Length: 272
Image (cartoon, rainbow, N blue to C red):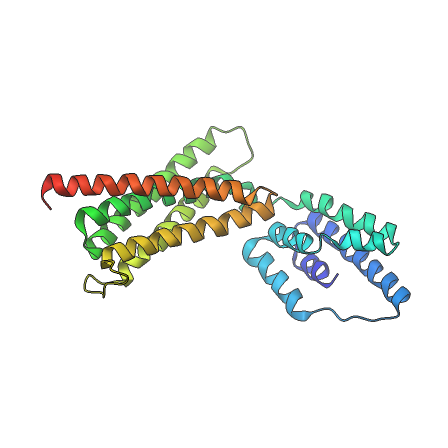
C-alpha cells in the first residue's frame, strides 16, 4: 500500500499515476478488512518501502512493480484460503493492470539496449581473448580493447540510428542510438577493467600468468553482466531467464575459444 502510494506521488505520467493510486486504494481497503477481521494493526517496513522506491528510480517503475508482484504472488492464494475471495480477485487483477505501465524508455528501447550489450559482450570478449594471446601484455591489450570498443560503440549507435529511422514505429532514432551506444560503451569499460587493474608483473595465481588472469576475470564479468541483464528482462517482460542466459553464455564461450585459437595462430605466424 505504502509503496504504491509513494510511487503514485512520484509518477509524472497521468495514466500511470491513476493506476498506481487505484491499486494503493485497493491495498488500503484490503488492509482495513484484514485489520478488522484479525484485530491486529501491522506497521509497514520502512526499509522495504525505501528499497522498492529506490529500485523504481534506478531500474524503472515496471521492473520494481513486477518484482514486488512476484514476491507477493502467493498473496491471492492465501486470501482465498482465508475466505477473502474479493480481495484475492483484486490481487489477481493487479498484474494485468501493471502491464499497462510499460511506457518507459528503458522498455521501449530494450531491443536497442540488447543490441549494444550483446554485441559488446561477444565482439569485445572475443577481441580481448585474441589480443591477450597474441600480445600477452596487459596495457597493450587494454589500449587496443578500448580503441576497438569505443570506435565500435559509435559505429553501432550510428547503425541503430539509421535502422530506427527506417522503422515504422514511434521510437526516436536518436534515443535508440543513445541506448545502443551507451550499453555498448559501458559493457566495454567493464570488460577492460581487469587489464587496467592488473600489472604484467602481478603474481601468478593458480599457476595463471597475469594476462590469463585478466581474461578469466573479464569472462566472469561478462557472465555477471549477462546474468543481471537477463534477470531484469525476465522480471520486466516475463521472459524465461534460464533459456536466454544459457544461450548467451554458450555464444560468449564459443566466440572466446575461437578468438583464443586465432590469437595463438597469429602469434606463432608472426613470431611475436
